[in-house]
Image (cartoon, rainbow, N blue to C red; front, side, top):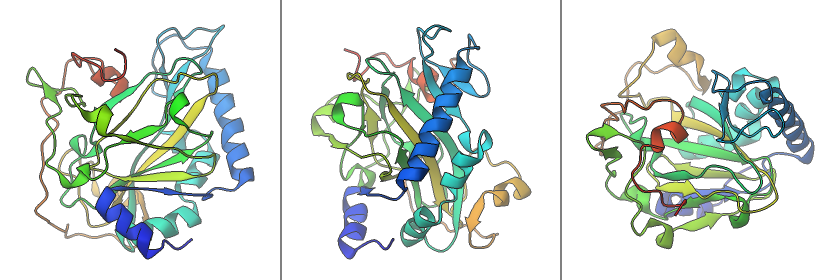
Length: 284
């Protein structure tokens, strides 16, 4: 799947793309079925684990799984999606021949519920030596405004990095004033993907509909983009290289950076960290 010149320009100017039919109906059905299995498994846990992040109100009778952590490690179907050749061909056009994945998660919004994700820039969580860094969201379900699709602020990836701190601690979200009014939705059908730049402001509202919204999220970076925080070790770093060869000299560009420290005492998934925010953009 080759991106057109118009699509490449749109990504550069607006900071995001919607790419249609990247995953086949059979691939989508497999991801839906596997995800249903994990929701069923989550009935048997009562608090957050290394695998499951739970919505408030989760119970055995009414399982509400908010996030499946590191899904590529939980089932081969998710790992295949991470390495999907059609998707990687698209990514090489945006990031170059060397592509590394950073992390993975599966965010779920239960019908008539589903926690919001407050306005933030992914860059605030993991700044790198250059900003050839992006997130891919795979729509496992149709995603519309009503069931909490991704909302973005076009062109915000070209603006300064916002402060994601409150009372001196990193809370993973920004002051929401004016953002919802300037945002646009990225509506997807199952099998489509969204791609957004790591510096693009984005968030999502609760699910107001009777339909689920399951969104498989993978973060990728150019091979020569090195993290400025949380570097692990050389072997682990290169084990996440999906295309290209290891690079021992990171590419340095004059990108704006804020370090996500000090950490807030309230730790966990983005939902837990953002719960410290004094004012929600979506739960008012």
